[in-house]
Amino acid sequence: MGPFPVKKESDYCLSNRLKVPRTTTYTVQTLFEQILNNDIDIEPEYQRGKVWRENKQICFIESLLRNLYVPPLVFAVNISEYETEIRTCIDGKQRLTSIYRFMEGLIPRKDVKFLGYLLTADWLPIDRLVLIFPSDTGGMYWYRNHPGVSKRKDILPQSLRRLFANKQLVCVEYSDLTNNDEREIFQRVQLGVTLSAAEKLQAINGPHAQNIRELLATHPLDNIPFDRSRATDFRCFVTLAHALTNYPKMNNILIKPSQLAKWLKSDVPKTFRTKMEETLVRMGEVSIPDKGNVSPVEVVFIGVLTNAVSDVRDLSDLVVKMRSREAHDGLCEVRGFQQDEEERIRLWQQWGKAKEQKVDKKSTSAYRAGLR
Image (cartoon, rainbow, N blue to C red; front, side):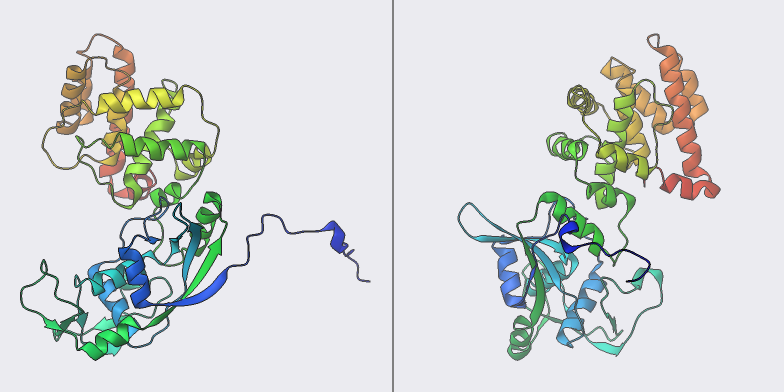
């Protein structure tokens, strides 16, 4: 026996083990039909928005046609109320989206010159795939004639369309997964395009996270134009919710993603939902001047200011000033309001600090760690 004692088998067991997944193959045609019939859900809450640009989708189609390696798709399989199987895509959304768009006639297949990688940050291999470098010859061929895309087009020969439709893709299927299990697998397999800080937050499951998702659905803030891609809206709501939980004692509104992640997993105070809903209702009444998108920082500060200014007209005026003047100019205007004067001034000072982070080139990383 060595220097280290060996535990008896009866004393040791693996905890939280998943059922062994089933490995199978499906044709591209089968996967396409399942997407059309909503038998495959490619948009679970934890999935990021569409990330691949059209060129990358076209490259993936070419990879399939040329029999290059494609990693397995990962599904969670559940039984619907109609006793049919529903597959939730845990890994492979970009590949499935590319297949769907190609077979719907939304993207073409392009001629190619050679195989290889483009050595730029935007074209690094995604999802462990070998991508094809498209040629500059401009030759494009379509799977079908979609009426909403390009009037003149060349359709692929029937033999090549049949070849593509019969391509077999390896799939790994899990059963009896909890929502937490799905999210954990999703986070572990994301080795392609790096998830943004906001997408990592969106993948977390917990009482606060579920509340935020429900509030996003019921209070989308359509009156405030801001970038909602790649879970930016989720992160805005989380940052605002965290600030309101600590209001008015918060020292810093913009906190690190790691702190937000920890908070999302904590217990929900009884007053949280009510306070957040009241704030979002008031934010929905704010009049936003038509001057382009509101930044994520501004969205959060508008929410905090709703708790410092009672009159919605005063609040709308303050938002206009906040977006049109430098922080020190707006500070003078804030002093013109009579109620909660000191509180509004302190909030405006925090707004000024956030603005400085945004415009200072040397603070780019600090700003990105804030809300981008």
